[in-house]
Each structure stands twice: as C-alpha cells, then as structure tokens.
Length: 393
Image 1 (cartoon, rainbow, N blue to C red):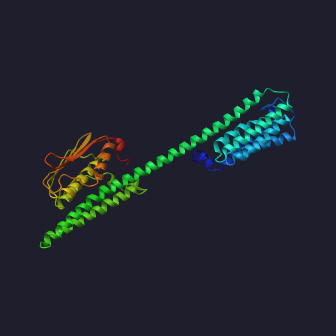
Image 2 (cartoon, rainbow, N blue to C red):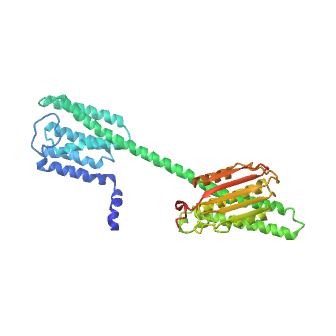
Image 3 (spheres, rainbow, N blue to C red):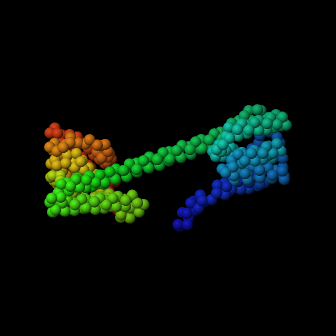
C-alpha cells in the first residue's frame, strides 16, 4: 500500500520530457491505426489520400515532439507545424493534427522568452498555409480558415492563462513565505525582549545596589548571590527559548518556554523583590492543569510590568493581582507614584506593544497607562480554555 501511494511522488520525480512522452506515444499510436486514417483535421477541402511513408513521417513530426512540449515549447511547435503542413497539403488528414492545438497551448503556458516573435511567426506561417490550401483546393470558404485560426488562438490563450495563474500563485507563495519569515522574526524578537529584559534589568538594579553595600559584607554577599541567581534564571530561560526555536522543539524540549510551570509568577515576584522593589502579590483561583497560551501571556504581562517598575519606578510599591477564572485570566499590575519616573514608560514601548499583540491574538483586552495618583497600571483580560491555543503535546 505504501508503494502505491508513492507512485505519484516517484512519477513527479521524472524529467518533464519523460512525463510528456506517454501523450506523444498515445497520439502516435492512434494516428497509425487504419480505422482513424483520414478522420482527423481537414483544412482546405483537399481530397483524402491513402496512408503512405510520407504520411508516417508527417505523423511522427506531429506526435513525437509533444514529448518536449514543456522543455522546448518553441521547437515542439515548429516541428508539429511542419508535420501539420505536410499532413494538410498532401491530404492525409490524420488524427495527429490534434497535436497542433496541444503544442500551441504548451507554448502559451511554458514559453518564457520571445513569446511575441513566436506568435507573429506562427501566424505568418499559418497565413501562408491557408493561402496555399485555398489556391490548390476546391475553393473552401475563407471562413473555415479563420475559424480554425481562432481555435488555435484560443488554445494559445488558455496556455497563457495557465502561465499567468502559475506566476500569480508563485508570487502569492513568495509573499506568504516573506510574511511568515517577518512574523517569525517578530516573534523571536518579542520572546528575546521578554526573557532578556526582565533578568538583565534585575541584575543591573541588584549590581547598582551592591555598590553601596561594601561596608556590610553579609548584605553584599546576599546582593551578589541575588545577581548570580538572576543570571542563572536568565540562562535557563534563554535555553528554553533556544529549545523552542530549534527544529526538534516538538519532541518535548522548550515546553516550559511556551507554557510556564506553576509557581513561575511567584518566582518573578521574588526575583523583583530581591532587586529592591516592594511587591505585593495576590493570586486567586487555580491555574489550569493543562497550560496554554493564556498562561504564557499572563506570565509575560506580569514579567514586563515588573521590569518596567524596576526600570522606571524603582523603590515604589508595586501590586500584582492575578485571577484564574474558568474562561479567562485577569492580570493587574500597578505601581505607586512615589518612586522616581513613576509615570513610566519612557522607553521605546516595544514591550507593551508586544503584550497588546499577544492579548489581541487571543481575543482579550489590554490596557496600560498612568493612574490618577501619578502611578502606572497594566491590566489584561486573557481568554483561557480555548483548545486551539493549547499545547499539542
């Protein structure tokens, strides 16, 4: 069964000349069958002639070049046209005449260069053939030649339409690939921002505080340990992120980066406290046993808000409230206006913009702005429990 399913794939692996050869052989075989002699295309009204060696040559010229109709469409058309002219001028009228519209369709579909020159050359050659047949024939009306030419033009037009359709599809796929690449780069940049900024900010604040503790060895040792612990957390998170970005991340590596385990919010809060930020933490409800994107977004909201509090309102009281509901997670992080630059953020705003995008993707609500007392508050309502956003494993 497996081998049968692989047949189409194996067939597509062959050269186009090999794949087009069966059509050429089929038309050649039908043209050589006596029952089909003089039952093909008849242009000009010349009386039929019995099949002979010249007829066989004309049939071969019309049929076999179809094997090259996609690789060398112009050469195919030239040979088929020559065979068709011999067929009609000698009065054989074989079924092989069907090859001409097929060749024209292939030219319209696959010829990349000199398309206009080819069209003009073929039209001129057809006009010469039509005039010759009209003179040596019994006087068939000119309308028959015009009608047949329109049929051939239609075949060319269908091929040109196929070519333009393929080109549009190729352009669409390229655009989609570029958009996907840009989206992936944005996602990676956002993850790096979320993971790195918080830890580095905490380390900077802790290191700055340690400079003033040289006279208190015990507190200095605690501060340096806090810096080291924060650095280890940063390395761990970066490893998880790299696992997520690696090709084999679906094998189980990187799961924690996508879905923070229970207790990570408390770890964030404790890390921020060690950096010198007074944080009150309240968590109500029970986190989902099967974490999904909502849990990750909630984690990122708290992480970014605490990072901004450290950077722009160091020393100000900060409150973190997280409510786990059946259908949504509500997060609120507020900072008092008592610290320096408490009306933050004054940076690029990239972190908050990234959070807004994350929440919007899940259909939630996000807001961030100054409070009436001069502080700053970040609020997010994140829909949860959507199967489509949960981990596949």
